[in-house]
Length: 113
Image (cartoon, rainbow, N blue to C red):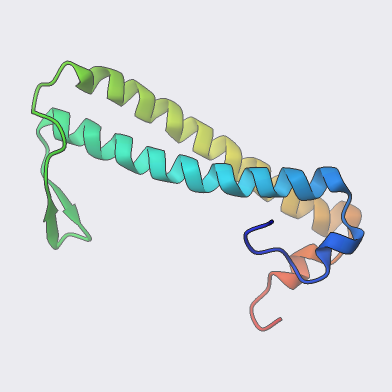
C-alpha cells in the first residue's frame, strides 16, 4: 500500500513503477530518520549542544569523546549521500512522469487537486 498514491494511479501505472515508488518513499522516510539520529549521536559524541528549533535543549545520547563518535560520523556522512541519491531518484522519476510519460501523476500532486 503506497503512502499517498495519486487517485486512480493503481489502474494505469505499471507494477514496477508502483513498487519502485513505494520502495523509494519508504526508504526516504527511513533514511531521514536514520540521518537525523546519527547526526544527533555524532554531535553528542563531539560535545556539541543540540537544541530543537533553537529553543528546546536535547540531551546528549552518548558521552563526549566516545570512541563510537568517529564511526557514527562516518555513518552519518554515508547516510547523507544515500539521502541525496534517493531525493535525486525521486525528482528524476517525477520529471519522467511529467516530461516523458505525460501521465498526469505530477498534476495530481499539486495543491487543490
